[in-house]
Amino acid sequence: MSLLIAVAGWNSLPWVERLSSRLPGHTVRSYPDDLGDLSEIRYALAWKPEAGLLARCPNLEVIFSLGAGVDHLLAQPDLPAAPLVRVVDPDLTARMSEWVALQVLLHHRQQLTYLAQQKARLWKSLDQPAARRVRVGILGLGVLGTDAARVLATLGFEVAGWARSRKTLDGIACFAGSDELDTFLGRTDILVNLLPLTPDTRHLIDHALLSKLARDGALGGPVFINAGRGGSQVEADLVRALTDGTLTGASLDVFETEPLSPDSPLWGLENVVVTPHVAADSDPETISDYIAAQIAAHERGEKLENVVDRTVGY
Ligand code: NDP
Ligand code: OXD
Image (cartoon, rainbow, N blue to C red; front, side, top):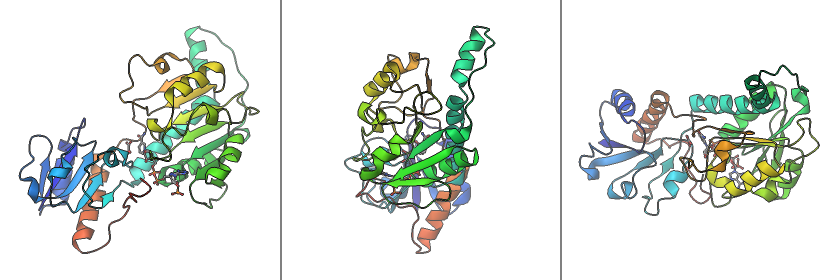
């Protein structure tokens, strides 16, 4: 029985090594040089796989996304109908909460201004609002949004979240559905996007939405942070909002087109932090162990966990 590691742009070797040690009864193949007989592949472990590759595996039982997001797979028109499992991994979750906390604190503590002052050799203190006076709003209260919300609440921020369905989380105000989106935005100083990219969330974050953020907050204007997917933002609107004062700053890890074009105006804006889709890397060791455990359970006849609902896209 074979499994295929189908990753583009990543080194597949650490995955091959870890999975071979965890699943000794299986042959581990990898794209592009060791595909073997594709009819023997039962499990595909994929990150942005070559178009059409999975469709050439006629006996696939499970497709594993090597990330938490699955938009890279659902965008393939010929994706086989096998169950699609995504990553839910405490290591990945912790990495994401680190990145989100880092960016929220960076804007809250005005680090971009202090870096500019440092360059100018300028010794000048700025107003320092308490975290409890800063309202953070998280779009998406799933695995990642919930953890980030808890971490930020522990740091003292006034945290709320928005999801499709109603949540109950201690100390976090929970909003649900499109009817409550405007109220959620109106109480938010720092907006954090941790939504999956689906037909409903594509281009959700446009100038009109950003204009609904609170303007009476302790930071002097709203901030936008995106580690969900770039397809959820309208990038031209974002640039406009960052230059016309609708936003005072942003931290962006994801973009409509990746890598971000060298021509994008976002690179040059002084109130913007750009990171190259690294908020939460997939660790080959912990995620291989998670997938190996799922394969073993599946072969014992048990149910797979974290199977994507293809009708909603996440
Ligand atoms: P989950 O599936 O656990 O959570 C998704 C959340 O989004 C849920 O709360 C869901 O609501 C909500 N949601 C989905 N659609 C809508 C909608 N139309 N309106 C309102 N709420 C909606 O995903 P994760 O938390 O595990 O991951 C989120 C995303 O983070 C991934 O899909 C991926 O795109 C991104 N990501 C980015 C990384 C990076 O390095 N930049 C790394 C890892 C992930 P409900 O709870 O009601 O279903
Ligand atoms: C993911 C990602 O979805 O890294 O895990 O973007």
